[in-house]
Amino acid sequence: MAALKSESSLKHSEKDYDWLGSGVYFWENDPQRALDWAKHKCKRGDYEHPFVIGSVIDLGNCLDLISRQEISVLEWAYNSLKQKLAAAGKLDEMPVNQDARGDRNGDKLLRYLDCAVINHLHYIIAEANNALEFPTYDSVRGLFTEGKEVYPGARFLTSTHTQIAVRNPACLKGYFLPPGLPQIVEEPLTYSVEEKAALTHEDWGGIVNSPTLFD
Image (cartoon, rainbow, N blue to C red):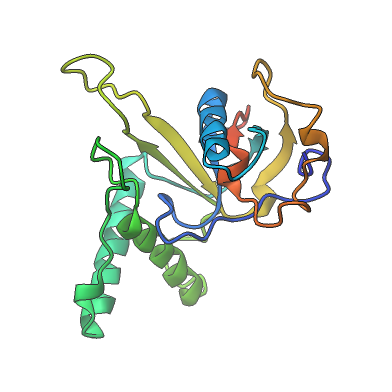
């Protein structure tokens, strides 16, 4: 609730397996998925109450990995990272995406390689100081297939979703409580970021619901 009351901002995730590299993460237009994740965190004993907030987001200059053009940028970044490691004699240290313990779907939930490639792209753009054709990215967006088959033989999976990682805090225009979710409101009113200094996007279960998303 601290973000809703403008008392604090959401923290960037900097995990080395983040699917879209570092940033503040949101599920796009999927508040129920956000709530499911928050409940999962509570079952693990991380927090007492599941809670979801929404954000109005201006994607700015977005590395949109749902578009073919941006996918080619990602391929270029991978080759650049590979060349850098090879030149240093460390090609065997190239990260690899891995399955999480207990995941029977083979979804490679630990995206070490993808995270490294995307963060490398951000790094070389910053180091080039605008000399490259790629401007600094404010956000990253991707579609992920995940989960079990919805029915036998289906290519629709139960947990397929779109995520957004916001890198530029100025893209977050405001926060709101998603309507229609069975959330506990009274308790989280005193459950602030100050009390849990290490809160990240995962703990909040962020979502996106932006009228400007597809302008």
